[in-house]
Length: 281
Picture (cartoon, one colour):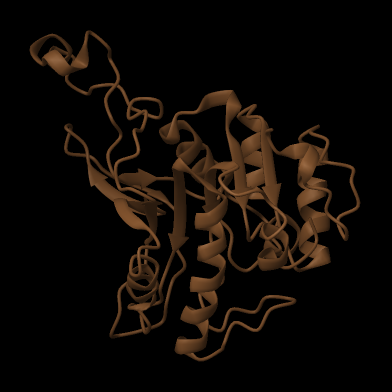
């Protein structure tokens, strides 16, 4: 839906959303089309508390709120300051902290060094390349049950399957809190990723799997951007995804991405959301 998320979420019923996955503006001076990303830190945190309060209202008691945040080498405290803001005054509990790894170098058992993923190079003698962002898992109670194996990985050492009782004979273990999810390689940022701050659909899919509600999931992204959450939701065959975006051009790109994937977005007029039919009774 085209519009401000505060106004849009006000039209949603309380406790009607299972899962929220979003990445708000970071207040780092990023060049969005329709949003000034350079307000004072105090004003930014106050605004974030306002929309997060609406997120809490619409989230079910057993719902999950996955908040993607990144800083910058010269401004590293922002994710932590925002997290502190959202975990005070009984707003949310921090249940898990995930690290979205964009680029990594590892040594294999055969002593081979492998580098995978992408990072944005910086020209600095003070800082190293920033290859990760945070994904904070926030809940109302801090005790929401997750499906830890849904997005899991096979055991490297198969003998563990028989040796450990908790495996229950399954060759699948919890992935843990380090998620290596690289961007897809692109040739033209202008045409293939025309938004200055996006996350890949695979990140949202991991959140959908971990939350574990399956096809019944109703997902909300208050800052839809070019539609990664909507695309992930559709590819995961979940019940519904509701998104808000203030920039009409970004919203149009989101609709084009769904169309290219042969997924039809809701045909209701984006300027006047009709949210009731999408919500459960």
